[in-house]
Image (cartoon, rainbow, N blue to C red):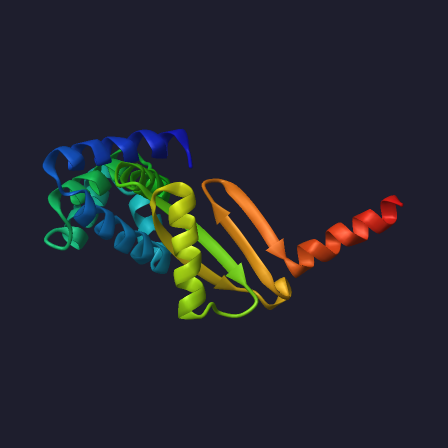
Length: 177
């Protein structure tokens, strides 16, 4: 995340927190992030400095007006005016982090060889909830190269309890002897 994204995302969050609309705006920013990723030509158009700023702002206004909260629309238009639409994802990340901190939510990413069962998922979430004292938003990935075990990333830390990692530890121990 960039410094610009942190400053602007946190600023938008502070404004939305005052109005008590943080959850709605979070959902709209997430939808826009997906939309922008699916339509990179739209971002290129809004970033094209050879097109007058007023026209680019008008394009954003026409595309999003009535589709998103006015604060979100004005935020996107501000990014267009500043020539910083490419910073949108960084701003969205900062906003999401502020929301999660404010609502005691931790995001965890778990990678396993095959999908977790509902019981495994529930037990993992319960354990993480007890460890952190926060609500857990769990994102799941599958990767057959994990072989077995769990790779967990949360709060900037990586917990590797995979068979692949343990075999690597054994390999290092053998080499050291």
